[in-house]
Every structure is written in structure tokens, then in C-alpha cells.
Length: 219
Image (cartoon, rainbow, N blue to C red; front, side):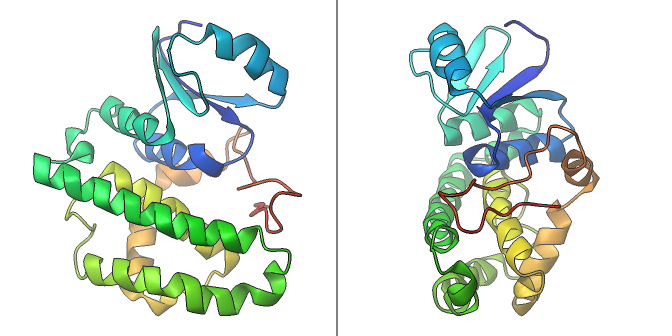
């Protein structure tokens, strides 16, 4: 499927693809959000035909060029914005970006444990205070008075922002405990992201039931 637009392929949920979607939407990159609802369409048709030795979801297709694996796809999307600073201004910064990404992956694991817990409603507030807050304390300290953890916007910001957005959806007042994180959240929540949220193809659930007790469904 050759097209002049980027094609981002993933299931009809937010999950692993959402930070990539946020990054593209923020930068107003016109892309085709290829949503798979039929598993056989992916496994029997598109997966074997994908021009890569590593077929997987999510993927990004740029003409005949294909990249898979979530972090690599996020970086390729950053590259396609034309803003090279998203990948780091120098090799040391690129390492620091990878550090922030990996730290956020640990935060993601904690949030997954919460949203898949059968007693989500009962334990949510205590869990946020005891398990999630220590991560946000570290991010808040690292951010300090800067606009972004690296001092400028990078691809890892969209990965982190994705999980701050989930926390904001769980409890709209939660981030207020860290004013600099709340400002950071609003700083990235630009008109491109807001417009994308209103598009017809926008996946409204973070994860689907019954895998997740809290699906994060947006109204």
C-alpha cells in the first residue's frame, strides 16, 4: 500500500500506539490511522505483506519503507516531523531521552497493574498515592522549573505525556499535587492534540474489557 501519507497501523485501542499518535497530532503531521478490528485482516493479509523482516504492531509505513516496534516507530515519527531536536540535540541528550523513556516504561507497568486490577474502583486512590506518586515525585524533581525534562521537547515527552493523560482521566485533580507537572501536561496538550481527539477515527479506550477493569474510555 504505497501512499504519500504516513500510515500508522494498530488495533482500535490507544495502548502502545497512542504516544505515536500524540506526537504526530501535536506536530500536525497528516497520517492515516490504520485501525485493525479484524485480527485476520492483520495476521492473514497485512502482516505477511508488510515490507519488513520484523512485522508487528504498531508499525509505521512511509511509502515502501516500514518500521516496527513501539519505541522505534515513535522515533521514526519524530524524525518525520522535521524537528530533529525531538531525537536529541547531541549524543548525551539522546541517552538522556532513552533514560526518560525507560523510566516512563516502569511507570507504565505500575499503571497497567492498576487498570487491570479487579478491584480498581476500591483501590484506585490508595494505589495512586502509594505506587504512582513516587514516580511523579521523581519526574517533578527532574523537571523543576524547566518547560521539558531535557529543556526542550523530545519524543520521550509524548511517551510520558500519554501516562500523565491516563492519570488525568482517572482523576482530573491528581496532577495538581505537582504544579509543574500539571503545567507540563497543559503545555503539551496543544490544539493539534485536541483536534485529533475529536476525529472520527480516534480510539476512545486505552485498553478493552475484560483485560482491563478500567478501560479509560473517553466520552
